[in-house]
Length: 375
Image 1 (cartoon, rainbow, N blue to C red):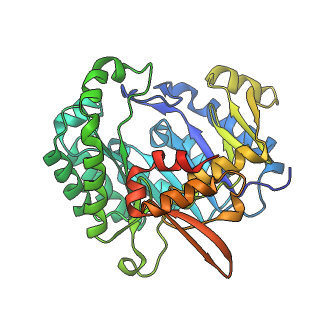
Image 2: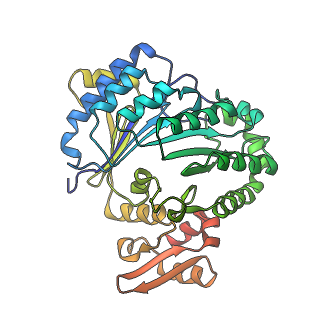
């Protein structure tokens, strides 16, 4: 392994309820198993000590609903994790209490990502979310009162029944809370989910509206002083927040093609040219680590060409130019010239070498442009 990972992802699968559109590895309830699962996570953390950099830059606790985990077990896990410059925890709004906020802050968490999704009660009902709009507002205010100064909100658009006016109202409600960061995703109908079965036809009917919704999101948030730094992600510009760089550093590592270590059931790692995926069986995961063994995994070797293609496709999601020499084998130069002439790609050269980036118009077209650029 040429390099140890400075970025750590930890998966906490437990939820109070599984939303119909979710296709993540989750387990509903099972409070009696939270302690055994944290034991397994800590055992995997110890087994993977050699894969982890001495200085960890970011740690991200995702799920599931990490803040649904029994507080004592969540505190035990946080206390055992390596210290990091950015430690993010995902939270569902209804789980955020003053006690939880204090637990997170006292255990080194310095960034919280709140899954708002929408502020319209009818749309939250479609999504099968348990939180109300007031729960979202209360969660953010509770985190502020505890001392958190880096809060992210997740929003969805393209929800069945959502109108353009609903989206405008959701963005306005989110901005009123003054989050440092916003992630705004088009709702995807994942094959096999209850949501696709119930709403797939309506999602297909409204597909034509998605481009307009995307432009509304970008225009509204950039006018409000947010930097559109990644296709679906926005942070307060430095001049709006005392010079801080509020991009999600953990996710930025993914988009820049950095190695990362994933712990937990279903977690993915990319280490030294190999992608590995812990299998999604909670029972097998816990049993293997209780026996002192690594969890059952799938391994996928990544040849240099694959890594370059991934680096190109992910890097073009960002607002900063990508160094051509890092993706030279994956970039179709002729296509880049052709797309540059159409105003979709920006090519530049300077003392540090040639770069490629999507223009604003190219970013709205996104994946289609990227596919054309990739060999």
